[in-house]
Length: 203
Image (cartoon, rainbow, N blue to C red; front, side, top):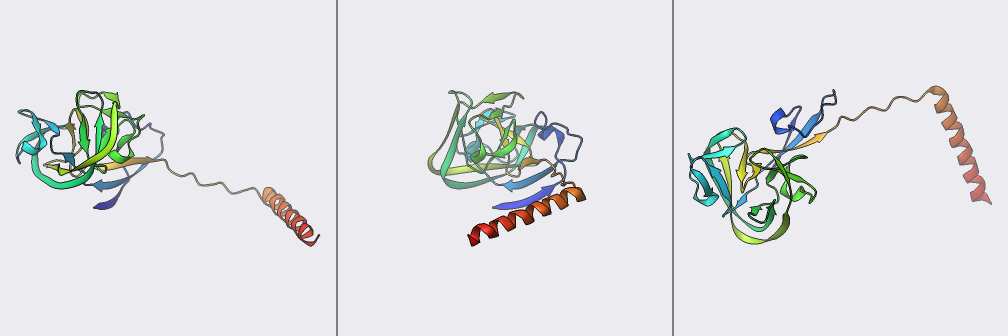
């Protein structure tokens, strides 16, 4: 399910270290994407690390805003899943539409490049160690929090159920009108070119 939403601004902390201030208004286009995490994904909770499948409504999950209570857990099944990791110690299994925090911004897992660096729950960025799409055919989970935020999944910051994906788009500069003399010169050149083409066709 995809709902296209337009915003004129974006919270600074969601884009900290990603966007340079050009002095002009930047516009952001968002798509609310309901991605999910694999059933064995380890989330950081107030009581320690727990499998996402074992977390219940009301438990507090670690986010960019601190520990936030779980409002609802959305579940489903997926045939394919993305395996993503920053070390050989842990692999995050995530659906291709799920938002992931990178140095380029919050993007879909399917749009990640091997050159991207992922945001970790300690605030640092790390290179990708492993990235592959594979068969899964199993249950997936997506936590909906009392307050939408990035959550820590296998130490990587990813979106919750309602986290938007943001793409910075620099404003388009309007073309300045051509000087009258230049317009006349272009028209003369066009007329000459047309005459030349007519002669070539008639030869």
